Image (cartoon, rainbow over all chains, first blue to last red; front, side, top):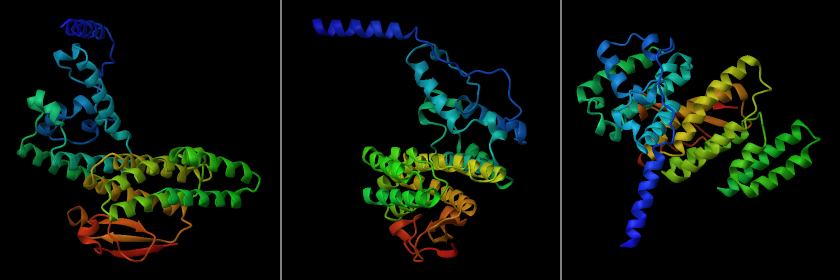
Length: 150
Length: 189
């Protein structure tokens, strides 16, 4: 019993302690000229969907939820955003060469088709980020056109 | 695996002999030492402007996919990343360098994904990686004779290319499911 108390106390200290650890926030006021939406004519509905379902992790601006103020949640999110942007940053779209755009689009299409993106852990909390079958078809159709036009 | 890497290591050594006679000894020793410590270090430790090592790594990856061997493909993908890192583009024209940088940046991403994905994904990335390597070899050339093969079925019947060292078709996109699907498009070198 005594051990349980000690362990509980240590955990509490750690939990309180990590609240003071800083994280880097992924936020930017401006949308660069190189953004996917700036260089492509994206239909409004698809714009909205990409914004809500993809841009949190794949652009320079994340719409943070309130619980991002709590550790270790903030770390987990930070890690997702860093990794997500490394793979694909919609804000940097025009900076990718045609070869890389083609690669990125191929991966985007295949992951949306296979329901791998948006991540399940993300849509679990962000219900509005989920893609309905109809939305999936629309986005795939549009992005396939973008890929063809490269 | 070990023997294959050792062979590609020797190949590279041979190249250096042709290139520049002075540093044979030193490079040779370096090869031995890093070969023992790790595969990654081996390819990172020496720069080369010849495609030999990359082609060898690619063929290893291709063979693993032909054999439906996910782990083997993952390992080969990882080694390929370091082979790209050790590729020296300085001897090419600035135009070629730009092109090579672009190709390698793309190809490295695909190789990385291959090192950490299930086999169906590995094959999707292998498709684009193959195009990258074909484009790369068009610039760098290849010492080994290669066959550019084409499988018309993969990718929702859009088809996909790959490189092989033998004329005989062994399909890396379907493996044992459709081993002989495809045909030779052309012979390179």
